[in-house]
Image 1: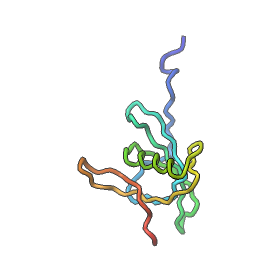
Image 2 (image 1 turned 60 degrees about the horizontal axis):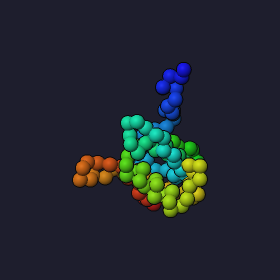
Image 3 (image 1 turned 90 degrees about the vertical axis):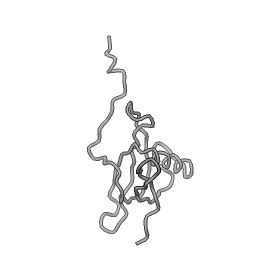
Image 4 (image 1 turned 180 degrees about the vertical axis):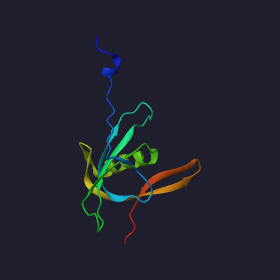
Length: 114
């Protein structure tokens, strides 16, 4: 007999995948949704790279359960296309915190030109 727990997907924790925070600016290259019992829409695992003068090209990995960000990721995938978790075009983004009617949430926006 096989224990029930052995039949369920394993949640892989990645020590180098950080939660998004306001001010994070990077080039978004793709994402996947990891199923979750706790979060009905799952956990978005976001991949990209830094494109500033200091850390140009360094890979970054984030995670979020934010509904607005997950919706924006789906919109990006629909707009530019996605294949095996990788967007068909790269999207520069900055994470901002927005005060909504029901509290604060994170959102992507265009990075400021600097």
